[in-house]
Length: 445
Ligand SMILES: Cc1cc2nc3c(=O)[nH]c(=O)nc-3n(C[C@H](O)[C@H](O)[C@H](O)COP(=O)(O)OP(=O)(O)OC[C@H]3O[C@@H](n4cnc5c(N)ncnc54)[C@H](O)[C@@H]3O)c2cc1C
Image 1: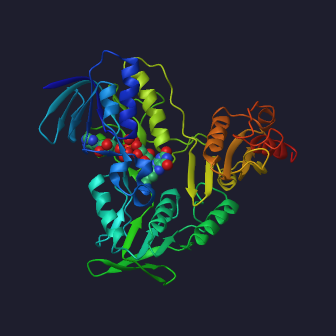
Image 2: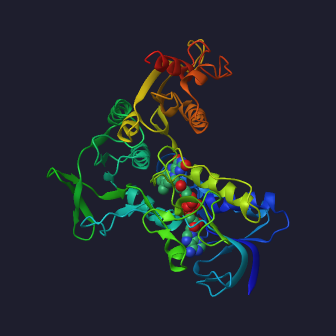
Image 3: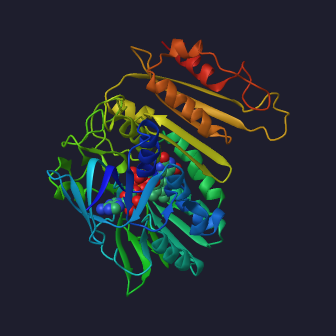
């Protein structure tokens, strides 16, 4: 039997980060990481394989990060856990004993039970090099691509596939707008306009009822009777937590929402921690279970695990959800709740909006506008959410807003928050979008 002080199951964003953090806190521990796949993709970079990057090879996390941190890598699949004996068995027939174990088994793409979903050339987004190479080959011959799902991932695929020259790219979205789970309607409309300008067809408020073809897909039928020609279909409708191993080993698990963990990221067994897409998460604002699954959340949880393995030092935060993406030259960022989501959750809200050039003076070459919308709870003035769109600074500003949300800052505090500005780097201090949006919201009280 092989032995490890810390055994990590899963080697993507979360598992690797557990290894790095654990090494910092426990320099002498023997750390072993077991993962299924030979090569690990940068999950968030997957859509860019099909346009900007051109190949899976250019989107890999190098194993050197594990070597550098003295984390032993084993390519194998853990098939069972014996919690009492503190051992795991792999499909390759190896047996490992552990002091502490971390489950970072991630998520699997959601495959809807639509008739025809099993046809050739219908692809879900598996985080797997060989599978994505098959998608790459199929796209090389494609003229008509249908993407089911108009969230961030679906739109990133649409934009990248258009970039690589696929003639007809169509996104079919169930909700009245693309990106509606992350942005308010007025921002979704701008994104849809940008997609149309780039030649992408958007069909919203439509449910796909079947994928039709003989062995290969021919077309996709939606509930309005429309038949959209397709030689490749991509499913971009979210993920489900990968919890089979945890479930089979008798840990407390909600099959749909994930492995139960406490604020220290401990599972129902004191020697087993879990982090990342496989865990059950609660919304920062309401405490209710949330669908949010992001690499940025998984790595935050991983750092908590790394710190806590042999001594509890760090509490995890419930996820806020900070997103960013780019469609053409339009960058979009979102943190926390949208106005619609906040109202639906029962908050009375006020909003403030401000738009300004992202450099000053605006005559500096490359200056673009950036608009910010902030959403506050009316009574407390606490920031609940923010959305950003326009220039490429959107991602950084969304992260700034995320930090203000996590610290539960009020509009009046944000107005006096000290921001650094510079002509080449930021908006002018006079027109700084976050400060101004907060002040405009305050004047509505
Ligand atoms: C196309 C796409 C774009 C995305 N873009 C973004 C983005 O821009 N920003 C962002 O924050 N998030 C993004 N995400 C979400 C992000 O990819 C996930 O949140 C992240 O991958 C979660 O990491 P994880 O390590 O928890 O799980 P996963 O990435 O799912 O990895 C799970 C790991 O566990 C291994 N494993 C599972 N079971 C076993 C077993 N029994 N034995 C051994 N190994 C096992 C797997 O092989 C894998 O290594 C995107 C996701 C996709 C699909």
